[in-house]
Amino acid sequence: MTKESKIKTLKPFLRWAGGKTWLTKYMDSFIPSEFNNYYEPFLGGGSVFFYLKSRGKIKNKAFLSDSNADLINTYDTLKTKPKELFKLLKTHFDSEDEYYKMRSTEFTDPIQKAAQFLYLNKTSFNGIYRVNLNGKYNVPYGRKNLSSIYDFEHLANVSDALKNTCLSTMDFKIGCDRVEVTDFVFIDPPYTVAHENNGFIKYNQSIFSWENQIQLAELTKQLERKGAFFLVTNAYHDSIKKIYITGKQQKLSRASNIGGIGAKRTKYKEIIISNIVK
Ligand SMILES: C[S@@+](CC[C@H](N)C(=O)[O-])C[C@H]1O[C@@H](n2cnc3c(N)ncnc32)[C@H](O)[C@@H]1O
Image (cartoon, rainbow, N blue to C red; front, side):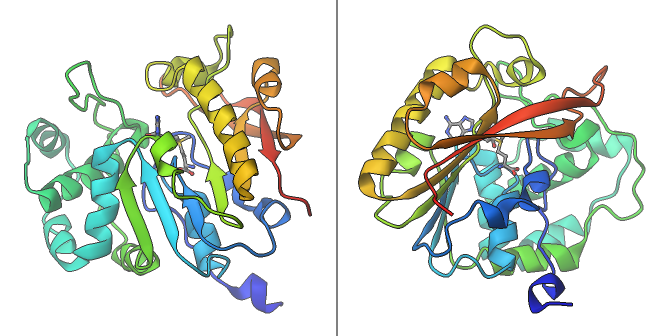
């Protein structure tokens, strides 16, 4: 067994729609052999960050951001106050009554908010993050009756992995402002395509518009000019292929069960767009 294969890869600590754990098995063939700082402006469950970090690929600083403030608060609390967070998590149990009580409580303390976020993520239906027009989380109970909701050893490892990171709630355009030459930017936006009603667009349309996709393609041109490495994932679709004029485009196929109730397992074609020459 090689030293590389003995390393335990750290998995995400959240269930997250569009998570890229499936991509990590191909990751080594896509990433630059050396890079300075790491940027991930659509962090979500952070599967690629945790993969790269636990395999020693991120040697300098990691700048991790997402527009979801509750998500970033959870990462930040786990990074800076794990003991206080674990104390609260240890009081949780999985039941329908408890779920709806927790869902309807409005916490103001950031540690309590993080504990609530983790609880709902683990016990809700499919771990989906969805809010109504008033910004209230509205996903139903998952009915799992878990005897233990959290893996504290894993959470402690995640907390350690986050030590040398800079976490921010930001739009992706600002999240990439400080990128410099030889930095590596992994870009995994919500998938939206022009004029097609696929599973991705149905789920994400309200949060990521077609105009955002165009701005993102523009951003890759700026990254290229700065001399940074970028790797974008997106839906394999003509409209997406057309808006990227920098980088090489490659198709990847995978199975997915996006969509929650009524969803079926479908083959999705995804595109990787990158200026990294291997
Ligand atoms: C496909 S998910 C990322 C999944 C992640 N790579 C993983 O492995 O779990 C896309 C993320 O983009 C975030 N997002 C949506 N609009 C954004 C914006 N304008 N700027 C920054 N992040 C945004 C969402 O909150 C979501 O977490």
